[in-house]
Amino acid sequence: MKILGIESSCDETSAAVISSSENKITLLSNVVTTSLPLHAATGGIIPEVAAREQIKYILPVIDQALQNANIKNNSIPDIDAIAVTVGPGLIGSLLVGVETARTLSYIWKKPLIPVNHLFGHIYANWIYSDLIGTDTRDPQLTTDYYFPAIALVVSGGHTDLALMKSHENILWLGGTRDDAAGEALDKIGRLLGISYPAGSAIEKLALLGNPKAYSFPRPMIGSDDFDFSFSGLKTAVLRLVRSINNITEQDKENICAATQTAIIDVLTAKTIKAAEKYQAKSIVLGGGVAANQTLKTNLSQKAQELNVAIFIPPKNLCTDNAAMIAAAGFFKNQKIPWQEIVPNPELYFD
Ligand code: KG4
Ligand code: ZN
Image (cartoon, rainbow, N blue to C red; front, side):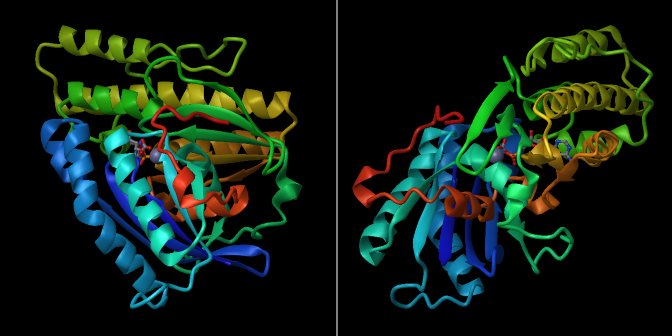
């Protein structure tokens, strides 16, 4: 079975083809383009600008993904379904992907699979790829062995914990009450003059700084739930930055190190607490912030102490991409006729 995935929920435009055979999902192509440089110039995403860029990129990206997968594109491509992100995301951006998928479904007579972007981030862990080449774990569809699993989706828009009892039974445990972890990093980066998105630059600066130079709050780290809150941390950094007359490069590095540590401490504590409570056999990570090496190292260490397996997608599958959407489409596999697909910017775990 071959699935064409389409992702356009925010500022990335992506198309990918996966093939499921011999009990594993193989990535045949994954083309990602982004309008990020435009948003870096304005310090954040302007939805209207992102949607216009989606329109520009969507067809060339799909065309390229089909070509890279060696699927003929001069008539009807050899695919079995089209999986597309229906939400959550920016409505203008979502509409471009959904309407394109709907049109292709109608013309090619291929079923559509609506995909929740959050499940996409989780299912980035179920992709095996020679293209990526770093994956050595035993793949894949036999992963019942790894359930129950705790999924941490941590990105610019989301910080959520979910309990995966099976592919059919995914239960939301908690999420951020205000800023997402990536959003907090991006906003703190802005205070420090770091261009958007700041997560990766903060990680580099943090390596040079002293995480103990400042003691920032770890909001809700001990709360009796699986919720998060990062806006207080942002305010603490704002106050500190205002109190320093002339911020040196060393101050910046220290602030980045202390901020990143505070965020990672909370993410790690809550994820491990969920793994303990639900006696998880594995932890799966997803989302742009999961590209952070310190988070990966800390969480892996704690998971190992608990004797829980941990899966983290390669960097290019942590950030938004269509391969993860196609993979989630494979597992969710709720095919619908083209007339029924509707984008939903507010979509949550369901
Ligand atoms: O998953 P993603 O590409 O888009 C959303 O769905 O939001 O995540 C983007 C977020 C941004 O907030 C960015 O700052 C953060 O991921 N990010 C990182 C790193 N790389 C990207 N955060 C921490 N460390 C990184 N290496
Ligand atoms: Zn995302």
